[in-house]
Length: 409
Image 1 (cartoon, rainbow, N blue to C red):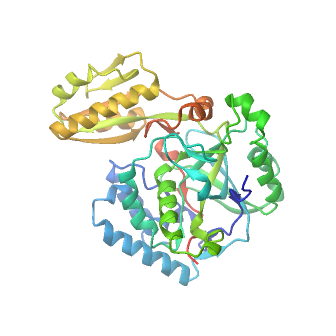
Image 2 (cartoon, rainbow, N blue to C red):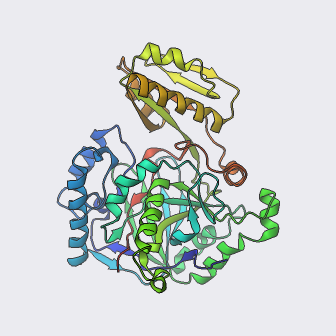
């Protein structure tokens, strides 16, 4: 096995006294809630912030090219004016609390994109857990292809039932240098970071998870499956696409060390107590509600609930979760193609119901929760789930942009 699948690289942190303004939530959240982004912009105005360096997806149809051009210029300005501090090669242990969990432990580390494949039946060391929509990559590629620095919201899961890697680092965290400790904006909780400089032993522990006897016992076969993308799959797929395009222009001898070959992510144990899976619901609007609901009754979506703005109704079918979601998504797609309308993907029962309330042209479809302990076994056997099957926690618990990494030479 290529022992470069996981590496310790230089990580950039902001040179600022206001970390709360700096760190902003993942761009793919609150895409139907402009009030969230307006309030955030008001809070961080005039301060160093990743909101100036990333593109919230709510603005993808709002002068995106101009916004991307400004973002890339902001990154260059931040690089030139001393806004970053570069750490020596290593990892950062992250300790996050949210309004919903007391503690979630992660590890900021760099993975090799050559070992990642997002196809539905991938057998690579790093795999997608949900379906990847190819047409979602180009707008993100516009952002990455000319950016000098990446700011990831990607969370990658690993399957360590004995909890021997990040949990051990957490127990010994006092021996490491604390590099940040602050309250996240917009009610995102708190976060601490510790710089892990003795990283070689940590890397070896990750590779030990690929022991053949262990894999056969867990998955029924010697499936070399180390990391599963839990959040930010399209962002990682974009990084992979960018690298595939770029490496064609680079001499072979330079490819192994080029920074764009790698991506910074947060590694989290799927068994971490702060990790819980929440369903991602469908918010369909701009439709003839009665006509949509009538057609939906004929769809075997498994165990799901339907909210019409007045009542929450059980619509139980006998499909398993992935099959049910595929059936509902196929119906939504066909209905919109034939009749018009829009679909969005929403975290949280209350958030969905709030969006539907008061609208005569909207419906909410609520799915069941996935058992996180089944994730690796299912993906090993069947491949990726349908896109937008699950979310790791509520929207406010998503990873905030904080650390960065240079991806150009």
